[in-house]
Image (cartoon, rainbow, N blue to C red; front, side, top):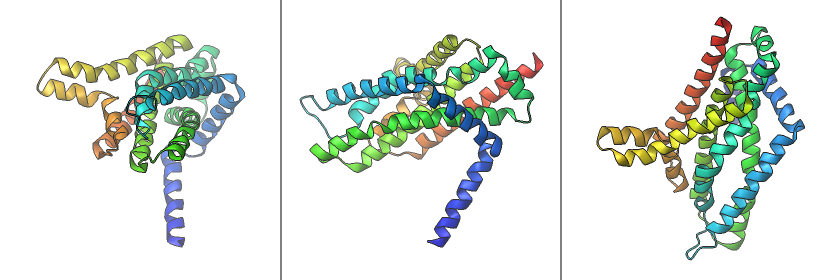
Length: 258
């Protein structure tokens, strides 16, 4: 048990340094307080819970209902997340640019990647807390039915990875415009393209079809929702998050030369 605690401690310490240390934690804490002090996060959470509640009821009201989360997670991933993620992240850097505080932040003894990761972590925590509200549906499934725990856990794991990727896209969009509405629309547009790549893969054949299918952000989630945890899907989402956060960092760095 002592060895496990030490291993866990070392893991948290490594994560702390990967995230950028104290500066990143400070920025994340500041953004969290901003989220919790404004009504926006609560409105988003309420809308998210209401829409997923409707989707959940529809999923268990069909001719052949199943005690699983796939019925409401998949339509949520398709219709709700591409809207919610850009709205939640649109203010992170766009507002800083509009108020003129981004230049002050970038000239302070804080690295660009620490700013990006800190803001991403804060928005991700808010989104995770919002998603956790849907655990009530899982409780209902367990109370009224006999659900298989494996697909439920894998479904939520994939959903968290998928929403993380969507948030990273939203943060990149927020760094490209000082207008929050424009940033939200740009983030939605990028996500829509990555979702439609899966549909476009059916229009071509051969290696081009495979490339489009593998590039689709939604196709990789569908495996999770069916109870399949594939290492490639994990790698895809983690790589996607890393790439978009890297691009956001480069976007901030480019402001130094403007």
